[in-house]
Amino acid sequence: MGHQPHNGIAVAGITLQLQDAVATIAIDLPQPKNSFRVENAKALGAQLDAALEGGARCVVLRGAGAVFSAGWDIGSIDPAADDPMAMISQVIGPLCQQLRALPVPTIAAVAGPALGFGFGLALCCDMVLAEEEALFGSPFRHIGMVPDTGAHHILLSRTGFALASELIYTGRLVNGAEAAALRLVNRAVPTGAVAEEAQKLAQNIASGPTAAFRLSKEVLLEGGDFDSMLAHEARQLQKVFATDDLKEGIAAFQQRRRPAFTGR
Image (cartoon, rainbow, N blue to C red; front, side):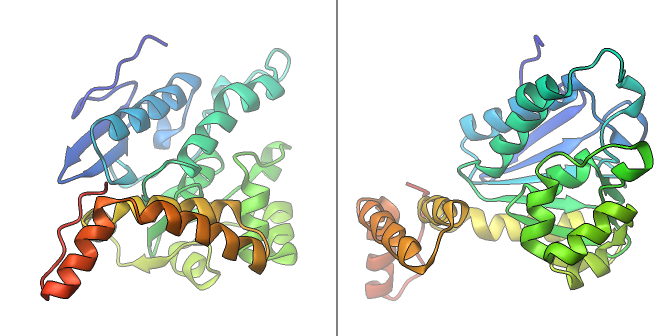
């Protein structure tokens, strides 16, 4: 789309700030409630790339204000002309896959609504912190659509078939406190605290052995039965023994000092 990512500058309404190996990507769109259009989705993908290029060891995704994202800009949809297969395969799917498989830990910090496309973006992150009054859901039933962004997989894996069916069929929204109780998100925090709590968590993670975290993320994403995951862990341990972080961690333990991990 001709957009170039810049540290600290909005790119099609998506800003990136890098500090202490933590990349904070904020959604600040001109459409109501941070609703997305194609150019915004592509800009988010570009900023994820820029975060990695800038050396980020953890990424926080949040809304710039009191709204995460109410989803896709419905006003930009034309059922008579749009090609949903092309939209999923060329725009929405690649972005969700990029976010889900990003080789560094990711945290969604959710205030306000995270609905539809916004719900999918939040739950494609490794971890989600939500304000107690945040709102989650895929209310596609109200416009006669099927949820996208991998929402069926996410709901099924986190809540089970019956509750996933209920949330899809009714379009019911859950607040942050209920989402935490249902294990849709990691935890709920008081209103106004999510940005600070997400930064604390991100800084803690970014100071850790992020090379090992990347290898663990690969195991978690691939999944499988006990035996296959045990074998995958062995392969990852073989790789981690070649990292500087493992050498530093062992040396720090032996010298009774705090390790200084570099992510390599």
